[in-house]
Amino acid sequence: MLKKAAEEDDSTFVREAMIETFWFGANALIGLPIGLVLIMLAREVLRALVALAFGFRVFEIKWGFGRVVGTKSIGPIEWVRGAMPLGASIRAESGQAKRHRLGGLAQAGLPLSIQIVVALALNTSSEAAFDTLTSGFAPLAGLRLANLLLIAVHALFAVESAAGDQTDVRQLLDLAFAPAEASRHARARYYARYARHWLERGDVERAKAILDQGVTQLAHDPLVVACKERVVHQDLRSVVDQGACSRALQIMIEDDAPRRREASRAATLPERLRRSAISVLPLIFAALICTALATESIARFAHHRLVVSSSRVADRGRPDDCEAALVGWSRWTPLISASLASDAEILRDRHAGLARLEACRGHLEEAVAHQAVANEAADQALSQHADDGGIEDAERRLRDEIGRAALLRRTAEFESRRHRYRVALATLARASLELDTTRKRLAYDAESPDLMNGESSLEGERARIEVARSEILARMQVN
Image (cartoon, rainbow, N blue to C red; front, side, top):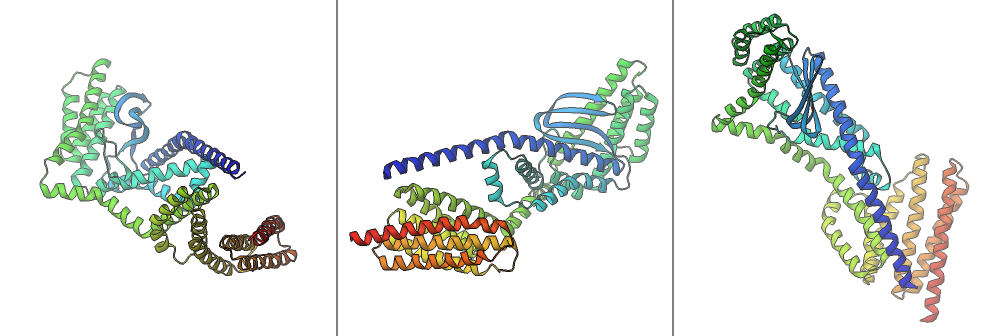
């Protein structure tokens, strides 16, 4: 009989694990990419609106990152496809000296700031988010996960690809610490792109006028001068020549960024050290913030997973598995104790799980010791819930009272296995008395029908106590 029950428990455990794995895989492979696409589209639409609000002109919208594999002009905007499809960016430039750097900072920082505000407003705990992803198709959880993933990439890694694609924090750092010449060079790219825009539409005179304005405004910037010489010294009366000149200008604009990177490589050693220090600033700040703020979240997530896995392992009743689960507890207990030492519910659940694992491997003395700590923590947790805190607190109090009775029942079972039958029966009597007190309180509590539904759980625990009492009495007669 016991072997059959163990086989049924194993099959149930495997089935639940397979279902959780299936849903997690479905959400990760389907929900997460969809969430990433939607959030990236929203990010770039917002970035384009910010650019227009600051007087910038949007020249290019790129889907993907890395090398360019295709381009198509639609109206004044050029649509570009990158080799890696998971990414998006826009190319917006302005020739105005006023608010140029401020506009660039707003484009780089505003989408990321809104993402962080949304993530903080949702305030979903890590263990709850993980459970949601493993319990069914969860598009909202996928969106939250995609948002957090993009925040991590764009806020922590100050990187730039060979094709010029940058993360948000890299753009912010480049703009914040760039010299004045960098702003002038960005304005030069605006005049070059704007001239190319009119050249593609056959307005050669307007393209020349724009480049003349750029030369006047930017004191003979090399890029603007080179574009002007190409336009002035080439016969542009035919459409073919205009197209060839437009492509030449595009190559000059694209080659401009690699030349700047070569110039940065040729900088002095102090300049290289300064740039490297700026690049790792986000990671340094993130490490400090995580150390200060995320320790408790990590500890709660680890505790939640350990409690769930310990319950499953104890139900299976294999001593070797229980031994391995205790090793896992020993690894995480220092962090949990340091971060959540004053949390009575954490202490209750931890020692209750440890007690079951110790009993599973046959160490009843250690199991009783852990169970005593769990019972004391349960009393402390129950005393912290005020009775006048509303229906939510009343329901929580009911769950805690039934849970405390279950802990007492498990204590009696451990004492019975130690042949301390009188102590076990006295413990069950205390559990029954406390459930009677809870039942009387529920009889006069008519604030919510949900509380009355708790009577079924209460009666179920009472039935389990009676079964435990019968088993203990049977053992007493045998022994």
